[in-house]
Image (tube, rainbow over all chains, first blue to last red; front, side):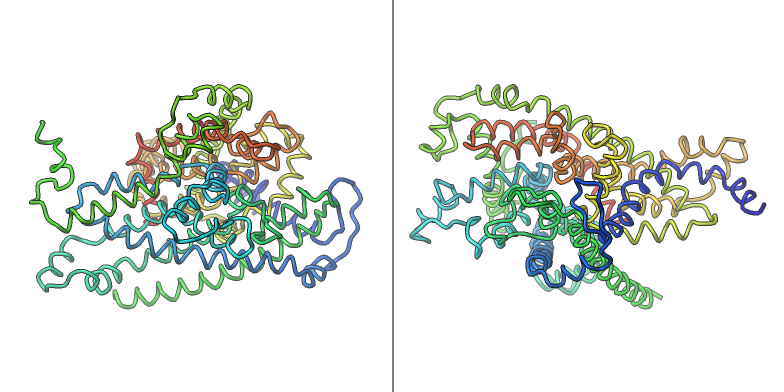
Length: 307
Length: 288
């Protein structure tokens, strides 16, 4: 009776949430549980036959060096791109935020252009630009005399990750730039006026006056950028397919290759791929929890100074 | 009017010319030129012949080969992929915006049993990457018979990115004042009408944010359309179509550049026209 009563009182609330909850149920929550279920089975995905193996897949993963390499590369990618992207865009945002600079809207548009370009296009265009055969980048390096032989940026295991990181930062720099600019807009003009009176300018103004004010935004930007940097599949897939010799195989490529057996014609292992996804997801969830905890502490600290 | 448009005016505005501004502008201009070089290269290549492309590294083509565009549009099916992408983008923007706004509104403004559970569930899943859920999503669509059509792709594209939007909407709605809503309720306006005519218009900045972010997401999405269109190439999106170009034995670079140009022109035009909304919308994501 009480349940029915609650349902009646809040019927409009539940009704209004229904479309969103159905969508989320199908594509957010159900997949998480389904992935855990698949992860405990030996299953190719083509046959109906699923063999329950319990934690067998996870044990295999722990001993699979290809999995750990892919895992490590995802982390390297995250650590390689996010700080670089945030730092460069912060400096640019501070320059573009100068009120005397009349062309900043134009410059901002140019820098934002890669953001609105589909990733697959970017991957393919850069494959050619970085090509060792007639690629413009190598052409320039050769003309300047910086190298004597063309560099096979995407074809060698040493240069492939830095190249992909570089292209990623180029692609998404515009969006972090917008975030920083939004943060800088919240700095009141009076602050700059006061700083001028105290003859504080240049890097001292940036470090001791502006940065502390926009610090609370840094965490939000860090979070959004980190989420984005984990979804790097399209860029790497369209540039290298994870190659050469798995040299750029990040977690998502590993999952895709294992689940759908893209190239090598081996048997797809959906269960194994799902287990990899679950393990990776669990680690990320742990990281999120840590970050949330850190965020809470910072917020409490700032609330303390305000009060 | 003429004085307004002089180069000096564009660079310095009403201020006296200064060396620092000139230098900064010049450096930035150079940087931007390098920055957008890949686009210049792409457009230039799309107008060259396959032979000229390797022989002439300059940006100005000798003769303009418009045939590349015909080849990309007709033979490589870019025309069809273009409309597929348009349908998926428009459909998912509508679905996502309406459903997450309603969900966020209720979660952000009302107390009812189960609210905390839903809220925690949404916040906890923000970090789950696509690669994690792609297999069950594909299985689910297969079970429903939607695994190889545009409707299934639109649904999945909507579902995949919605979590962040729910959290953003809930946050935005929770800080709007109560008075308007109460006044409307006194007038006897129904719950749904209050949301649609009173609260949703108030949340316009956040609606813009969500629309823009979803457009970018749908136009950029790759893993999901790649998996879903494996069995049915006719419903490929532009991203997958261009990727397929690369898979064929000999790469038709100029045709591919034409196809790539086709795929970026609509978003670039949209961006330049609606730039203010893009910028404010994205800024809304961090300002909360």
